Each structure stands twice: as C-alpha cells, then as structure tokens.
Amino acid sequence: MIETDIIIIGAGPVGLFTVFEAGLLKLHCHLIDSLPQPGGQCSEIYPKKPIYDIPGFPSILAGELVDNLMAQAAPFKPGFTLGEAAMTIDKTDDGKFIVTTVKGTKHAAPIVVIAGGLGVFEPRKPPIENLLDYEDKGVEYIIKDPEFYRGKRCVIAGGGDSALDWSIFLAEKNIAKEVVLVHRSSSFRGHLDSVQKVIDMAGTGKIKLITEAEVTGIGGNGKVENVLIIHQKDGEIIQETDHFIPLFGLKPSLGPIANWGLEIDKNAIKVNTLDYSTNIPGIYAIGDVNIYENKLKLILCGFHEGTLAVQSAFARIYPDKKNILKYTTVNGVQGF
Image (cartoon, rainbow, N blue to C red; front, side, top):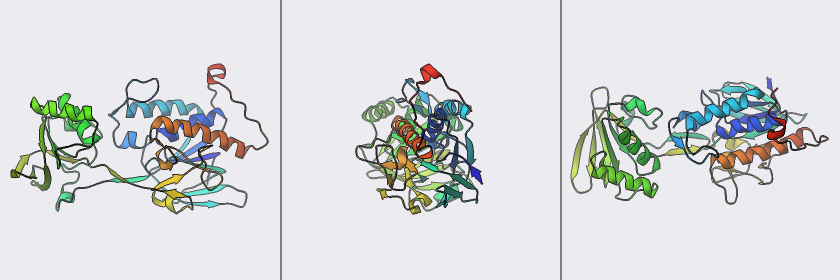
C-alpha cells in the first residue's frame, strides 16, 4: 500500500504543478498515470510542439514545459506509479480513499485530485480496409518527433490545426523531403493564419495541397509505399509516399473514472468552482477533465484550479489548522 496526503490521477502539466502547490503547504503527493512517463499529452503526443500561452514564456516546447514542471516539483519528492491506469476507488472506515490500478497497485490518501486531462484517448482512424496492416510500418496517428520524418515523403490527412501545423512545420523546416496535405473539403477547421500559410506554401510548391479528396487505400510490400486518393473531380490519384499520417484528432473517454459515482456531464466531471471539488467530498477534478460554466481548456486555467483545490484539501486534512498564505517571493521554496 502506497500512502500519501494527496493522490493525483494524471501526471500531465496540471497534475505536476499541483505537486508544487501542495508542497508549499507541506502536503505529499503521489501521481498515477497510464502513460509510461510524466507529462501527459505534452510528452506522449507533441513534445516538440511549441506552446505560446504559458505566462513568462513567449514560446516553449511542450516537452521543455514538462521538464521545467518536473524540476519545479522535485523539491517536494512526489511519488509516481506510471504505466498503470487507475481502475477503482474505495472508501475506508477512517475516511481515506483507496485507489487501485489495473495492475493491482493500491494507494491510500484522504484526498484524491483527478487531473486526467482528456482521460483515456485513442486516435480517430480513417475507414481504410487495410489500415491496421501498416500501423508502425509507415502509418502513424501522432507525430512525436518530427526528426523521424527527416528526408522522407509524407502524406498528411486532415483539416484541423494539427494537420495544418505539422504540414507547415515539416515543410518550412525542410525536414520532410515532400509534404502532401489531403483534406476532404476546400475549407479548413484550423486557425485562419495557418490556413493561409498552407495555401501560400502550396502556391510556392513547399506543400502539395489536395483538397476535396480522401485517402481510401494504402499500398506497399510490408511498409507504406503509396496511398490511393479519391478526388471529387479528378478521380483516382496514386501518391508515392513513405508515411501516411491521418491527423483526425483523438476520441477522449473518462475510462474507469466514469464508474466512480462522480457527477458527469458531456464526458467531463462537474465541479464546484469555489475549490474544484466534485460531488464526492475529498475528490477534486482539475484541468481538461472537469466542466463548469465558462470552462476554458487551457493549461494555465488548470494551474489555477489545482492551486485552489490544494488549499481546500489542506483544510480537509487539517480542519483545526489555519493556513496563512505565504508568498514564495518572501519565504522561498522549502522542500521536504
């Protein structure tokens, strides 16, 4: 049994910053995450993607943000159970929660903070008959490291920000030998400036843009060698390529957490914005996993939610103690 003050489910940026805020109150944290490393989507999906809305950083790579948050949390010696999804939660007679993972690891604490981001997620896959035959053989649903595509021909499918941004990045940085962007419509769902940049790069030949078309087949001997594109006007197009990257987003799900008796709305956990507590006393939900009026799914909002949640958690753990806010500029950061 792993015992701690606060169990944090989810080791993404919001969960990691919560360790820091809890540490300032001398509360120990232990984090549980189904991924094999801390950082959540920032580490698993887009570690090399720049983030522009973190205060104090005009631009920071997602992976660098995770590294900084780990360093910030380090003085407070958090524990980690990684590569194991939280499956069940039980309440003991003395008021503690027991969280058990899929591998049977048990954790006990008086407070549980759910910082699970979008929850369990999997990529949305196009309906191509032999798609599964080429997974990890030239078909990827997530770009983790753009250098993987150095000097290679890439066909990207999609019309959202991810497809636009990665097409621009791989072409603009001269990483991929060829970038082909295929979208089923002539209009895009992404930011207007990204759409215009793709159009401009297509005009100069940096990107081959094929709209009103879909990839419907994959060919190759043991690995991707070409894709079949059906164009609404021109019919069949055989496009030679080394990689097919359908970027159609992720299908999020709360997974086992949905069965914990929490109040759920639109696949997210309802909270009280006073302290981001749930309908179960002692359980909080912060970051993208929660929902409330005017909710914004931004990392910086999750930082705020985690800060208020641990203040409330302190009052639950130590009802007879008065917590006086101490500014780090005055007191510094004193770890355990």
